[in-house]
Image (cartoon, rainbow over all chains, first blue to last red; front, side):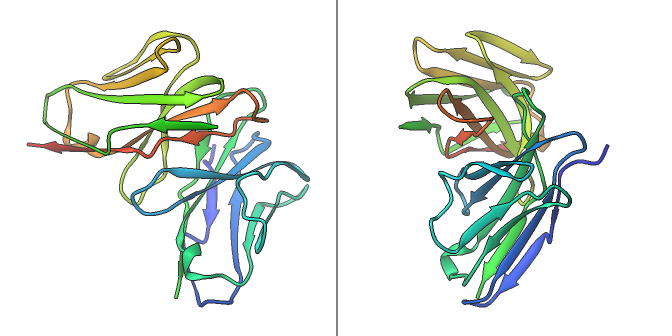
Length: 113
Length: 112
């Protein structure tokens, strides 16, 4: 059973470009979470999605950031017009309905030049 | 609001025991989880306390006391591979699904 998959593992963008981060949850998992981690800091919740629905986006910046989890395909975290402050590791996690444990993907490390 | 406080760094030698404390201020949560993260790696689930008391999983144990707003992770028989950052995390009552709030992390350095 493959774990949570994220791609790309590393992404370099120039200021003003768009970044698209992909996450495929573990097989059988219907809940997807996105977290952001700055160097030497803990993970900060961004958004929680189920298939075709955003359940909680309270941690997502109001502008430039969006997330989706379509019926088919991976969850996408999209950052438009990136700025240097967006440089961070972005982790996706998934869980089963009713289960406490979240399983994390390897993360995407975004560097904005 | 919700915040979880952990020490920033702990250093110990191989074979020793390390206790990482996590104190929290929260309006209410379901339980306390612990995650391990090696440099450049992904957080890996270690343990979960849904009720007060001690949970033991091999060399690692975790404890929760809701009345004291306090929990800890105990690492026994430390090995070099245990050098990593350890995060406590809580799931608020009011949050939908399993949204987690993380502490700032404790960096554990194991020396020979």
